[in-house]
Image (tube, rainbow, N blue to C red; front, top):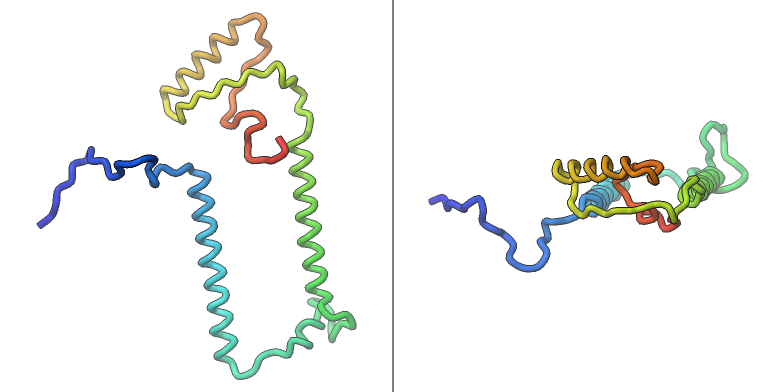
Length: 161
């Protein structure tokens, strides 16, 4: 016999609900799990192919080859070294670009910025409240401009700002 459960029944009675997770944290867990499954599948596939084949390429031959070059290279691991260099340099470039972007002078005086956290989340009532507040501020003669953002200044995801 089926059991009827009322729609307003609370499933969690203590503390903070484990199902009330921030979007960013949930997506990070999805990413980590998909990454684990993908690399797990790669490792299982490699093991299956490796142990099911009778012959396997000689590592000395494989690591002396370079794509687009006929024959063996005199330097072992030349291609692996090039790919490692490219990966490290791209990481350094991305690090420096993010540092530049997050520490760049945006042209405003931080002492002249008013930050009002709403703590209401994203809904129609919060939008109406923010719009009323913005309209009222624009009527003040001493206020130069009014802008809004989803992230607070200097409280984003960067360690630089």
